[in-house]
Length: 140
Length: 140
Length: 140
Image (cartoon, rainbow over all chains, first blue to last red; front, top):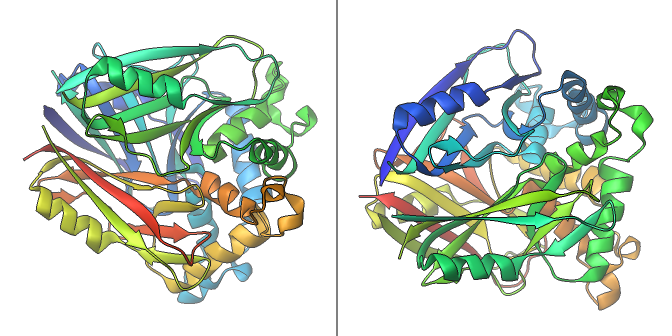
């Protein structure tokens, strides 16, 4: 069994942003030389997500609007967490809903994704340095 | 370390459907001969889910209604993704909420699930051929 | 490859409760002597969650209120599952939203979490004995 660990850093321009990181995940699989196993891709923050979905910019806008209108409005007044001086309680709830990590299967040296599946970093409280861990576990 | 990979195909009659796939997962664990490890069960599509919950048909109806009324109404008009010619943006948001994959622990040759836990495929945009990957990783 | 399995038991005083279990997960990592791998932490019930978020009591209250007001009101009348004699359909939907498991990366013998990340058990239908599995998989 072999393990390979790599960290991606982000500092988004906007406070909320969705970024396709599939190519960076693929690159780390190649570096690892692992051919059969699992790739964990996990946000190291509690106000961000990693998820698998579609590379389509209309959908990314839909996701951002849906998080704001349906799941957890930003509105700092409504959350007790924000009494600590933060204003980002909504980002925590968005991270809980969408999840903060995925496991991608690795088969015969390649990410075993369906035809439209891509891996994304979802930044829900950005404009500062944040990190994602990529960890490949398996057999070369 | 051993890995075993298998794909399940679905083509549901209804556009939304919930299907218990625990027996198929158990079967692949037996084929793999792996006794300690993790079983990844993951939808290979961005408009479907894999989840663990209860084998109870009333609950399945509750889940479908809740996705429609609370989480993401189908209503194609409200989503930009549907300007691409699709009408399934809601299925993407449902997949993000419920998740598209689970890891089931494998202990002493058996799925290590609680008494009521079963593994389900949640089809949110069906009536066409779609796939789930089962990947078992561990030691025989 | 080595595997180590441990079960945590809970019996909460309140019906809904959020409990920090990071120290128990860390302890099992030490017992396992595994230094590189993945730690699965997974609720063995369909009315509970395991998630990663912030150790901040205001946020925990926000999460409980958000589950009640936005995601799935307890209101037993609205769910068909409750025709079986249960009243906990909402707890199932909360488990689906927040998820029932996480994978924590294990690097150089330590949980590879970000600075604010902690592992929590989310009890959505407690006051009875329930269980979480911790399974460590990797290399010593």
